[in-house]
Amino acid sequence: MLIAAGALYASRPGAGVQLAAIIGGVCTSLFSAIGAYLFTWMGLDRKGMKQFATFVFMGMFVKMVFGLLAVVAVLMLWPDAKREFVVAFGLSYFIFTVLELFGLLKRIRPSFLS
Image (cartoon, rainbow, N blue to C red; front, side):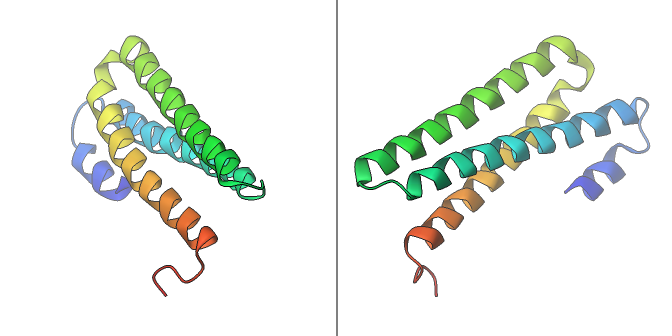
Protein backbone atom coordinates (compact mmCIF):
# COMPACT_ATOMS: atom_id res chain seq x y z
CA MET A 1 0.00 0.00 0.00
CA LEU A 2 2.82 2.39 0.87
CA ILE A 3 4.64 1.65 -2.39
CA ALA A 4 1.53 2.38 -4.45
CA ALA A 5 0.92 5.59 -2.53
CA GLY A 6 4.54 6.63 -2.98
CA ALA A 7 4.38 6.03 -6.73
CA LEU A 8 1.12 7.96 -6.97
CA TYR A 9 2.43 11.07 -5.24
CA ALA A 10 6.10 11.01 -6.31
CA SER A 11 5.56 13.24 -9.34
CA ARG A 12 3.46 15.92 -7.61
CA PRO A 13 4.78 19.05 -5.90
CA GLY A 14 4.78 18.65 -2.15
CA ALA A 15 5.07 14.89 -2.51
CA GLY A 16 7.21 14.60 0.59
CA VAL A 17 4.52 16.08 2.82
CA GLN A 18 1.85 13.87 1.32
CA LEU A 19 3.95 10.72 1.58
CA ALA A 20 4.75 11.60 5.19
CA ALA A 21 1.00 11.99 5.84
CA ILE A 22 0.32 8.55 4.38
CA ILE A 23 3.08 6.92 6.39
CA GLY A 24 1.91 8.81 9.48
CA GLY A 25 -1.66 7.60 9.00
CA VAL A 26 -0.60 3.98 8.65
CA CYS A 27 1.76 4.18 11.65
CA THR A 28 -0.84 5.90 13.83
CA SER A 29 -3.36 3.21 13.00
CA LEU A 30 -0.79 0.46 13.55
CA PHE A 31 0.25 1.68 16.99
CA SER A 32 -3.33 2.20 18.14
CA ALA A 33 -4.21 -1.31 16.93
CA ILE A 34 -1.24 -2.83 18.75
CA GLY A 35 -2.22 -1.00 21.94
CA ALA A 36 -5.83 -2.15 21.71
CA TYR A 37 -4.77 -5.73 20.93
CA LEU A 38 -2.44 -5.85 23.94
CA PHE A 39 -5.17 -4.40 26.15
CA THR A 40 -7.68 -7.03 25.05
CA TRP A 41 -5.01 -9.74 25.27
CA MET A 42 -4.78 -8.93 29.01
CA GLY A 43 -8.52 -9.51 29.21
CA LEU A 44 -8.10 -13.08 27.96
CA ASP A 45 -6.39 -14.02 31.21
CA ARG A 46 -9.30 -12.80 33.32
CA LYS A 47 -11.90 -15.20 34.56
CA GLY A 48 -15.41 -14.63 33.38
CA MET A 49 -16.89 -13.37 30.17
CA LYS A 50 -17.97 -10.05 31.70
CA GLN A 51 -14.39 -9.05 32.52
CA PHE A 52 -13.19 -10.16 29.09
CA ALA A 53 -15.93 -8.16 27.37
CA THR A 54 -14.99 -5.10 29.44
CA PHE A 55 -11.37 -5.36 28.29
CA VAL A 56 -12.40 -5.81 24.65
CA PHE A 57 -14.73 -2.81 24.68
CA MET A 58 -12.22 -0.64 26.53
CA GLY A 59 -9.53 -1.60 24.02
CA MET A 60 -11.76 -0.67 21.10
CA PHE A 61 -12.79 2.57 22.79
CA VAL A 62 -9.19 3.62 23.49
CA LYS A 63 -8.23 2.78 19.91
CA MET A 64 -11.10 4.81 18.51
CA VAL A 65 -10.46 7.84 20.75
CA PHE A 66 -6.73 7.77 19.98
CA GLY A 67 -7.52 7.62 16.25
CA LEU A 68 -10.03 10.45 16.38
CA LEU A 69 -7.60 12.64 18.31
CA ALA A 70 -4.91 11.94 15.72
CA VAL A 71 -7.25 12.80 12.85
CA VAL A 72 -8.39 16.03 14.52
CA ALA A 73 -4.79 17.01 15.25
CA VAL A 74 -3.77 16.44 11.62
CA LEU A 75 -6.80 18.32 10.30
CA MET A 76 -5.90 21.31 12.46
CA LEU A 77 -2.11 21.28 12.21
CA TRP A 78 -1.39 19.79 8.78
CA PRO A 79 -4.10 21.07 6.41
CA ASP A 80 -2.22 20.51 3.15
CA ALA A 81 -2.11 16.72 3.59
CA LYS A 82 -5.32 16.03 5.48
CA ARG A 83 -6.98 13.93 2.75
CA GLU A 84 -4.00 11.61 2.41
CA PHE A 85 -3.72 11.11 6.17
CA VAL A 86 -7.42 10.46 6.68
CA VAL A 87 -7.66 7.97 3.78
CA ALA A 88 -4.50 6.10 4.82
CA PHE A 89 -5.60 6.08 8.45
CA GLY A 90 -9.12 4.90 7.62
CA LEU A 91 -8.00 2.05 5.40
CA SER A 92 -5.31 0.97 7.85
CA TYR A 93 -7.74 1.22 10.78
CA PHE A 94 -10.14 -1.13 9.01
CA ILE A 95 -7.43 -3.61 8.02
CA PHE A 96 -5.84 -3.68 11.48
CA THR A 97 -9.23 -4.04 13.16
CA VAL A 98 -10.01 -7.09 11.03
CA LEU A 99 -6.59 -8.57 11.84
CA GLU A 100 -7.09 -7.82 15.54
CA LEU A 101 -10.45 -9.58 15.60
CA PHE A 102 -9.06 -12.50 13.64
CA GLY A 103 -6.19 -12.86 16.14
CA LEU A 104 -8.55 -12.73 19.10
CA LEU A 105 -10.85 -15.33 17.57
CA LYS A 106 -7.87 -17.62 16.93
CA ARG A 107 -6.81 -17.16 20.56
CA ILE A 108 -10.28 -17.79 21.96
CA ARG A 109 -11.15 -20.67 19.63
CA PRO A 110 -8.04 -22.41 18.32
CA SER A 111 -10.16 -24.39 15.84
CA PHE A 112 -11.32 -21.16 14.14
CA LEU A 113 -10.76 -21.53 10.38
CA SER A 114 -8.62 -24.63 10.77
